[in-house]
Image (cartoon, rainbow, N blue to C red; front, side, top):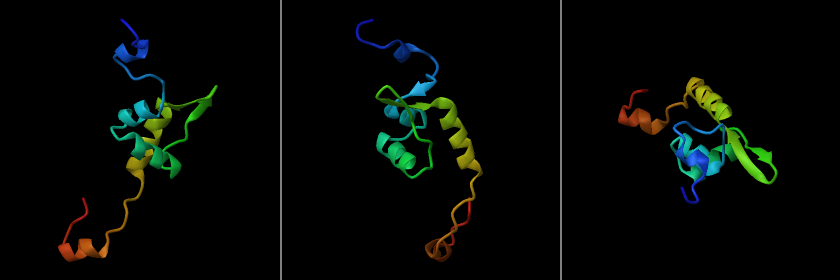
Length: 86
């Protein structure tokens, strides 16, 4: 098995994830993930003895909340191009 961690071979996501795994869980880059965390769109991580990890349940909840947020208003270019709301 070498240097692989146990979690690397599991068929389910771990409950606590570092930033790179949390970003991958949400299918985005680490930099996009951390930017959304800084903006308060996604939850802050939990500090455990010098590590920062994200709770999968918190990420799921934040994603569900994003789906129910009001959409941004159309801008004037959308009107010029005749783009419809999706």
